[in-house]
Amino acid sequence: MNLSSLKPAAGSVKVGKRVGRGQGSGKGGTAARGHKGAQSRSGYSRKLGFEGGQMPLQRRLPKFGFNNINRVEYKALNLDAIQALAEKLGATVISIDLLRENGLCAKKDLVKVLNRGEISSSLEVQAHGFSASAIESIEKAGGKAVQL
Image: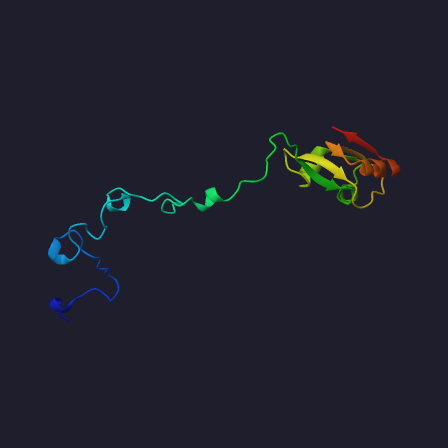
């Protein structure tokens, strides 16, 4: 090995074009940026989605839909889940706190009870909303639906 024969590994050093170094280099004058326009000037950066002055795609496509800021979202909870919880805990009152403790709803969720499945035991169910058929099923089993 000899100090005069050392050179970097192949592909590790990138040699870019040396621009703006005189006419004889072939990349002098405009430094390969062309004449005039934003791209020829320093500090230019193209905006995201810019299509050269053509109307950008995100402005050509129509907007649609509507978000109602007053919408009330409920966490749906079916009778079969309530029955399973009551059997597991042996509880007669199913409250919102009990549902939260057992991971059936989050802290800020509003709970609405729906009528999927069957309820066999007499339960007092507390929730923010009930479907008409869910109330009917709960009362038919001898329970009570308490709206909060």
